[in-house]
Each structure stands twice: as structure tokens, then as C-alpha cells.
Image (cartoon, rainbow, N blue to C red; front, side):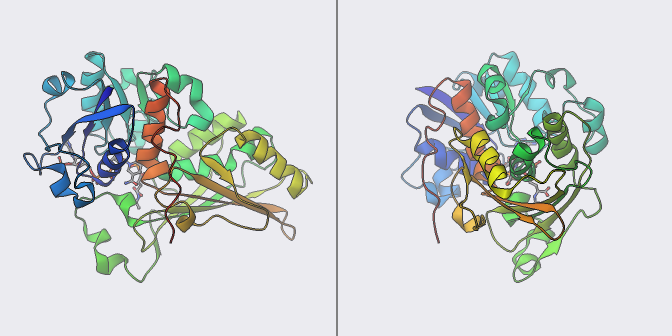
Length: 346
Ligand SMILES: NC(=O)C1=CN([C@@H]2O[C@H](COP(=O)(O)OP(=O)(O)OC[C@H]3O[C@@H](n4cnc5c(N)ncnc54)[C@H](OP(=O)(O)O)[C@@H]3O)[C@@H](O)[C@H]2O)C=CC1
Ligand SMILES: CC(=O)N[C@@H](CCC(=O)OP(=O)(O)O)C(=O)O
């Protein structure tokens, strides 16, 4: 059994990692850290785990933890992970970092959008953890930078169009909506029930969201040219789920059927991408609790624009599920292990 630890187990991605790992036949969860709940059973912090784990939350002590785990999930906020991850790598451990700290290949770009990087020397070796695009790099990596939730939904939705040069890359508009777990479990005014319930709002409007450079980095790599997009995130009064609606001008008169064939070809061997049937469109309630990214699209003949819709569960395919997928790949086991469950509906 491979021994794994979660750093930041008291957050939303941490508890989702614990839930998946409790049912994983190849990994044993041996440690879970939380400063605020140190000394408390994890199943007391999260009663959904009652009877599934005996682990007690503990304070973070890297040296001590390294004697009890071979692999680490860093599920802590960005700007925090960059100080922890190098210490784990230096002790010969493998790491999947769920934060944004090692996702941007250009250090200056990271420092523009986040802050000064304390361990930029590790950025170049990090594999971007989107298995559909970087499977081989992930298999060889000791550090995987797990993608952001919005980027996962947008990049997978656009990849076949960009790889085949079918859209005007200056025309992309991504309009995304996220459930509130996307903001994490720490108490904040903006995610209080009365601030979110029974309403719907945009935030970080006008090209100011920190996921923009990450999305543009990956879209540019796919199209082999610099891409700038418009991206507006919205906050939905639901717990889990992201729905992205992406618009782009078509540059050829290719038929919808032929585009569908390209999507099917690109994703036919991908266990976690589902192209929904013609005439139907993805919904957050159809991927909830699963590692699927559902994708649907249509051509708006009036404007010659393609409209792509993708849906994920932000804490599974957008975070913990994708992290376990990456860990499976890094460890050379069947990549779907522990992640085969169907979405829960309703
Ligand atoms: N929520 C989501 O949908 C997604 C989140 N992510 C990323 O995953 C990471 C975790 O997110 P999420 O679970 O939502 O965040 P939460 O705020 O819910 O949890 C953060 C966790 O980190 C711990 N933590 C915070 N600061 C420190 C610190 N200085 N040292 C050690 N532990 C610390 C907290 O525990 P305690 O305070 O008890 O120590 C808690 O367990 C973030 O980087 C986030 O950006 C990525 C994709 C999607
Ligand atoms: C609803 C909400 O607040 N979402 C978060 C994104 C969460 C996420 O995936 O981002 P990182 O992994 O890059 O932290 C936000 O807009 O900042």
C-alpha cells in the first residue's frame, strides 16, 4: 500500500481527498493536517467520514510526516504551498499541489498575479496536471501542479477547436459560473448564506481574475500562438459545480457533425471526459460528485459562432478527483482507480 498524506485536510478539497482516498484500494491515508483541528478525529470535523477513517488531525511537521507518507497532497491556499512543497521534494517525496503556486511556467507572470515566488526553481519541473493534455509528463513527474477549477472546464472545452485551428483565437469569451465551495471553507463575508442564497452575481469582471494567465497559458500552448481571452466568473448559490459557456468565431464552414467527430476523436480514450449527445448540453447536476468533465456544443448559424458548454464538479474534476487521477498516473496504477463512481443525481 502506498502511504499518502493530506496537508490541509480541513478544507473543502481536503475533505474530498479524504473521501476519495478512504475508498481507494491502492493508497492508505496515513496523515491529515489541520492547525485549527489538531488533536480532533477527522471524522469529527467531517461527520460524513464517520466509520471511514480513524485519523486524528495534526499540526504540520514536515520531518515527522515524511516518515509516515510517500506521497503528499498539498491542499493549502496559494502563496502557502510554495514554502511547503520544496521541503517535501527535498526529502524525496512526490507531491500533487492543488494550489496555483506551480501552475504558471513564467515566474514573472506568477509574480504579477500573485506575489514574489519563494521557490521559482521548482516551477520548471512541475507538470501541469491536466491528464488529457499532459499524461506523459505527469507519469514521470515528482511534482504535479493540479489545475484550477475554472481553467479545467475552459481548457478541456476548447482544446479540440484550438488543436484543429477552427476558431479565431482573438474572439474567445468564457463565461463561467461556480458553486461557493470554489471559494474554500475559510469564513468570509462573501460566502455567507445570505450573501449567496437566492442570488447570482459576477465577480472579478474585466480581466482581473487570477485564473486568466493560467487559462491563456494553456490555450496558447494548444494553438501554438499567444491567446488573450475575455473571462467573467460568477458565483452561483449552489455548493458544488462549475458551468462554463464559451463563445468563439468559427474560421471555417466545417459542419457541426465534423466538429463532433473531432471532439470524439480527441477524447475517445479519456476516461473522464464525456461528449454529451447532440442537441443536449451539460449541467452541473449531471457531474456532481464525479470526476467527469461533460462537454456539449452547437453552432449558432446566425453569428457563425460556436458555443461550447462544459460542466465539472469543482471539488472533484476541478480539484481533489483530478489530484487523485494525477497521483494514480505518477504511481503507475490504473488511472481510474478510486474515481469510477457515477455522479450523484439529483
Ligand atoms: N475549492 C475548490 O473548488 C478548489 C480549490 N483549489 C485550491 O486547493 C487549495 C485548497 O482549497 P480549499 O480546500 O478550497 O481551501 P480551504 O480554505 O477550504 O482549506 C485550506 C486548508 O489549508 C489549511 N491551511 C491554511 N493555511 C495554512 C497554512 N499556512 N499552513 C498549513 N495549512 C494551512 C487549512 O487548515 P487549517 O487552517 O486548519 O490549518 C485548510 O485545511 C487552494 O490552493 C485552492 O486554491 C483548487 C481547485 C478548486
Ligand atoms: C467561487 C470562487 O471563489 N472560486 C475561486 C477559484 C477556486 C479555484 O479553483 O482556484 P485555485 O485553485 O486557483 O485557487 C476564485 O474565484 O478565486
